[in-house]
Image 1 (cartoon, rainbow, N blue to C red):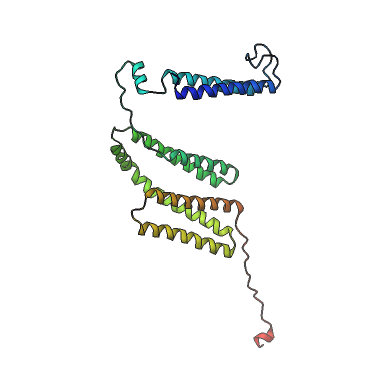
Image 2 (cartoon, helix red, strand yellow):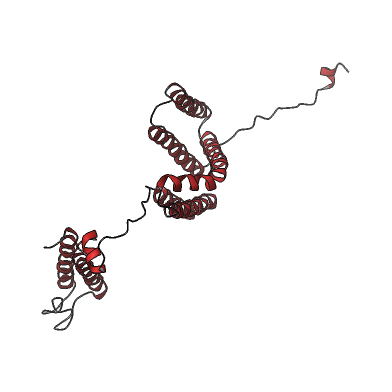
Length: 261
C-alpha cells in the first residue's frame, strides 16, 4: 500500500518530469532528446532542463524513502530496527523564533538598500533570535519533563531577557515615534502623538480592567501596534524630516532720534 507521503512526492516527480520535457521541446529540443535525457537528440536549454530533472529525481528519491519507512510510522520503524517499541521522543514546544528570524533577515535586506542603521537593527534581531532559539532547543531536550525544561530555561534566561527586552522595546519605540513626528507636519505631528498616546492608554486600560483576558490576545494587540509604529518609523526615516524654518529676530541699531540724542 502506498503511503500519503509517497503519493505526494511521486506525483510531484511526475509533474516535474513532464515540465522538464515540455521545457526541453519548447527551448529547441530535438527528436526524443528531452525524453532520453539527451541520449537521442538535444534537450534544448540545458540549465532549466537539468534543474527540473534534478528536482524530479530528488522528489522520486524522497517518495521511495517515505514508502520504505511507511511515512515514519512507529511500528514500521520498530520492525526495521528489530525492537519491540521505540523510545519516546522528547517533546518540543512551539516556537516564534523562526518568524522573528525571518523578520530580522528582512530588516537586514531592507537596510542594505535604505540605511546602515536599519541593517544593524536587523543584525541585532537575527543575533538575538539565534541565541534564544539555541536556548529553546537545548531546554526542550534537557529532561523528559516539559515543565522542568521550561523552568530551567526561565531560570537561566529570564534575568537577561526581561531587562534587555524592556530597554530594546522602549528604545526602538521612542526612536520610531521620533522619526514619525519629525517627518510629519506641525499639525500632523500633533495628530500622530495623540493617536499613539491613545493606543498606549487604551492597551493599559484594557489590561487593568480585564486582568483575566487572554495573554495571547494582549500580546497580539501589542505586537500589531508595535509593528505598525516600527513600520511607520522606517518609512518616515527613509522619507526624511520636514523642513524647519527658523524665525530670525531683526535687531536694528537705534538712530540718534530714537535714543533722544
